[in-house]
Image 1 (cartoon, rainbow, N blue to C red):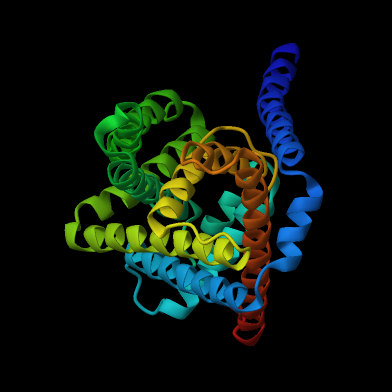
Image 2: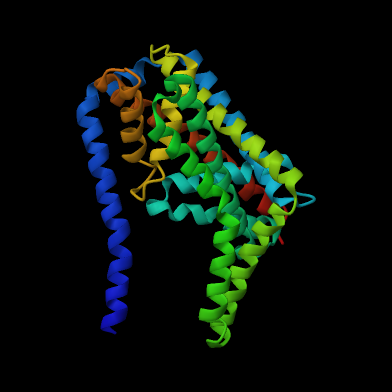
Length: 325
């Protein structure tokens, strides 16, 4: 009993400490940015560029839906429905605490396609690996264009991120073998968990064995993140900061990498702002301006995600009512 309580305490302590650290980062950035300045940027954002950012955000979600469609390879699951699932899953991943919302995508796939939850977890892992690979490519591009070859550490970071994503099939193969040895001999429950791990591995292996579809998914992922940088650029221009698009892509991509840190409470608060502030300060933007624009852009991004997520949840829910299983 004492051992189980100790393990439970350790499992809870990690997310709680990560959340506290994220809040501390958020508070530090807010102090540097000054709340009044963040509020001024939000109030003064040009309506036309705000609408442009909202439209580019819709294109981003459409690309996310197309990528999901490519990863699934499921007949009868159209682009529009895949986009709805992607939008709803992204909103849940953002607003559920401690990244627990990530599991909404496998749950939605199981609900809408009658697929096994383990298969959905495989799709989720593949999508996250593609996100990592795309961010690695964008970071490498940004470093080469903005800084040249004078920043070897930054280049090494992008190569590390890209390489980590490519190791997913190997990692799952190792996990599969460990699961068979650790769980398969432990009765029905153990065998059930071993089979779940095997289904996750098979889902990723299926994608690796289809290079054309996987290549298309990689291309869509790169375009998708490029659209996200377009959202950031439109918001910045709307706030009165017309920075070069290449520098915006560089700073925003490095800021997105900061979200890889295991520090999160809700909505990527803290890590994204800290990464944005550090990246744009390195690009020569004044510290206070970098912090304020990062917070304001993040808030607008959360508003967009909440809007499209709620819309997607509503359409998916109404579809379930009209076509009950």
